[in-house]
Image 1 (cartoon, rainbow, N blue to C red):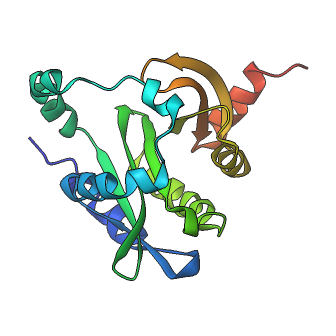
Image 2: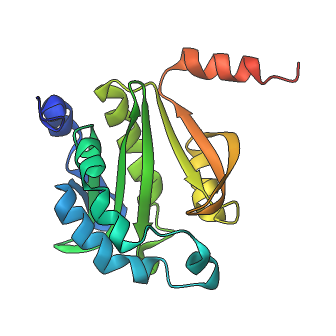
Amino acid sequence: MTDPQHLFANEREHHFPMTLPENIIGRQVEMATYFDIEDALTHQIFPDSPQVQRWFSLPKERRDEKRRLYTLQRMTHQEAVIFYDGETPIGYSAGRMTGASEFMMDETGILPAYRRKGIYAQFLQSYLPYLKDCGYERVVSYHSPTNRPVLIAKLKAEFNISGMELREHAGASVKLVYFLHQDRLITFQDVHSLE
């Protein structure tokens, strides 16, 4: 079986590393590295809150049972990007293929001291063309309806609200979609037009 990471070697070479504001560099990393950095930064990026504690988390004993499925999922295209200030990780973004034409931006976080500096907006401007070059047609993401900074950033980047889901592991979520080709955007706008 072909390693999905090698399928996009040319695209990766063209788009990475990414130069972002504040001298931040976005680098692709292996998933194991990503998970180590995500574990180290998550509590600083997303401090514990009563709402987050209510979200579903797969019990440890069932995680072991899911290893075969996780292995199968890893055979599809996954992306992991770490944002570095020098050699210090200050944030991350990960996503995965969810269909032959769709990529889901799954997790993104930036340390509070680095927020509101244009890092995420520039990341989107650089990352979306990379995903288009990989051959995707659309990019989806899910966000809390009260996560205004991310919703605003995504809407400014021309994501569209395409639905709302009630997810047991994250509560109410606004579904956003970005169309990587103009004909899909035009069709979406036409289908949902009030005219």
